[in-house]
Length: 560
Image 1 (spheres, rainbow, N blue to C red):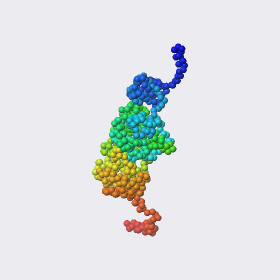
Image 2 (tube, one colour; image 1 turned 60 degrees about the vertical axis):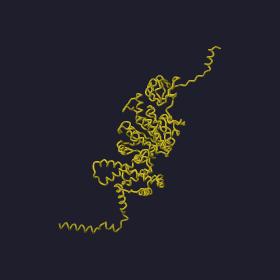
Image 3 (cartoon, helix red, strand yellow; image 1 turned 135 degrees about the vertical axis):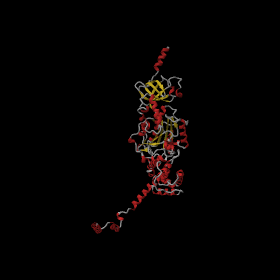
Image 4 (cartoon, rainbow, N blue to C red; image 1 turned 135 degrees about the horizontal axis):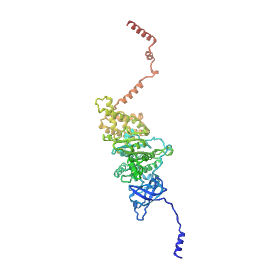
């Protein structure tokens, strides 16, 4: 048998199978974005694979590089790259995968530090989970939701009393750099310990040292036991910063779908918008105001709309979102701040003037608002916080006018003193969240005038004495925790508790005095049935006396 015959037999025995592949070729590479020709069947937001094209290729330490198709043009596709884009060259091959971007989710992620793709960064080994969620997902419709009715306590007295946050709400934290926006979120995470709330902290464009400091703080306060950290630092590509908040949201949605409560913090969405602007400009998308693309509003709306409080028949879980926006010199009317303000359910506005005046947290109660309001508060907090915001606003208005004159009446002076003590009580050091019952007790004492005779420099000491006594009264503390209402029993016990502190004396201001007077007048007015008949006869003059009076008047007129 000749060699040709042998080759022919081998060819006949061979079985060839064909697998269709949608392939393309890189025609341009630059700054984390590549343009690809071909890929005729690629879909938007589909993963694109860039396999090694040469045997000696060492791309991404031996791993294939992946990208995400964003721009679908007539003759090319714009792809953003995950990983080291500098190892890609013009002419390299690529192919579609038929998959969209997914991230790992589940209990195994709790306590870990991950990148935007769900890969571990904490050197604690791989993540043992087989469940994946897509980063992009349609938000739940109205039918699947219920109204926000459960409070999410931040542990910060000024926020829980005046700007309450509910589970399933979207509350914006906005202010200039260095005013304590991240500190508020860290207090909130620490305060969720033991409350069955999973927290996801998403760091976008932050310095690596700051992210490490946040993780160290959470570990110090034992808060990493219920927290997932998703890090896309400033040294990461704009692609990773763009994907990070959607990845964190998907991880929170897993727990919401399981009927549990989750809190996701985006720190911050200003840098997220910058990363998307960079990607869009590199993809040659038309730019608009401040060089942002036209869909910059949709970028954040489709992210924040995924926060929800699900109806009971759909699990009853919730996903609360706390996005952070950094302003420039307090300008809340800029493009990105106004966008996010219009998307969220309220905002906590931090002011530099208050921060410099020593008021921490430096939130402005006039510009801050929660559109959920009292629905996200317990009854006992409503009882003590009802007039707090109004009293504080009146104090600041009076304090402004008091600067121009020294002759003030006693009522105005009392209001000013009460306002100063309310401001002092609302001050709170960072990383020290307060239990809601402790908040209620202190605010009750302030509203009832027990702080009015205390010097300003002794307010913190006096507050500590009240909380120490309250902690020792376990019966009252348990009753208030379970009942969540200030009834007559609690009122009497609190009066005894505060009165036992030396130097404490209740001061009645004009407001409380008017209320007491109204109650006394109301109780002293007798009913018709209780008026004696003698008094009735005296109060109603008879017809004879009326005639006598008229005759005497006529005689006086004739004399004149």
